[in-house]
Every structure is written in structure tokens, then in C-alpha cells.
Length: 173
Image (cartoon, rainbow, N blue to C red):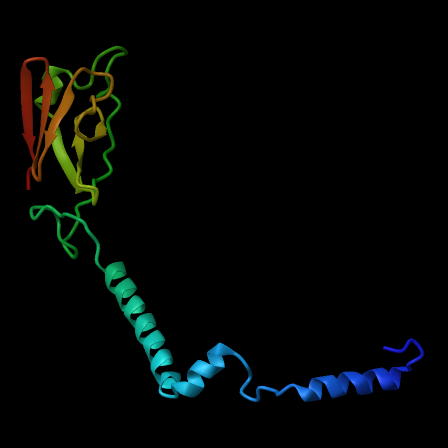
């Protein structure tokens, strides 16, 4: 190349060199070449992608609706009435002296099973009322500061233990 060549001559020389090569009018891409050789694939591939998207959406919808909860057949069914504990006003004279256990053996005989709640995690919660207070209990709980332990809760009973002694209270209708 001559150093004294001006810009017009340089562009003319470059144009001449590029013109000598045969241009690929098809785009030169292997992707484009594939679709030119297989024109039906222009319809088939998008259809496959749409089918895959629909299948994924259907699987997500189906698995999102189903829940894996084991419900006790004896438990309450949706739509059934739920009894709410009534507010109890305790009279001034019915209080315990300091240090007296409200869930002592003589008091447990008067305890009432006021409510039962079945949790979706598979355990029961019981509401036990005495003349001195109400307790919300689950299996393994001690009643207040006493030694009475909740051993078992079923769909209509609660069982307490104190050493060798056990007491079962049934829900009254």
C-alpha cells in the first residue's frame, strides 16, 4: 500500500477486495441454515415450547391446590358450629389463698373440658375450666404450677396423670 494514498482510494481498495469474495445471502448463520433446510421446524419447535409451558403450568396448578394434611375423621368438619367459651365472672368469695394449687386433686374432680381444637399439624389442644380458672393445654403440658401432666387428648376426652394417679375428663354435650 502506498503511503501517499488518500482516503477515497483506501475505501475504493477495500470495496474492491470485499467485492471479490462471494457474499452469503442466506445470513451465514447455522441457525438460519437449519430452518431453511427444515421449514416445518418453524412450526414444530414453537409448538413444542408451548406444550412444555402448558404442562408445567398444569403441574404447578394441580400440586398447588392439593394439600397433604391428615385430618382426624372425628374432628370438626368445616361448616360445623364451634362453641365459644362463655365469659365467666368469678365471685369475690371464690378465690384461692396464696400457695394453694388450683389443680389439686380435690379441684380436678370439678374440672370441665370446655373445648377441643384439632390443629392441622395433627395435635389436639384442650380448654379445661375449673371454678378457679381456665387452662389451654396440649399433651405434655403441666397444669399451671401443679404436678398434673396432660397424658392424652382425644376427640372428646383429656387424661391427666399425677404419679400413679390418672384422671380422665370427658366433654359434656
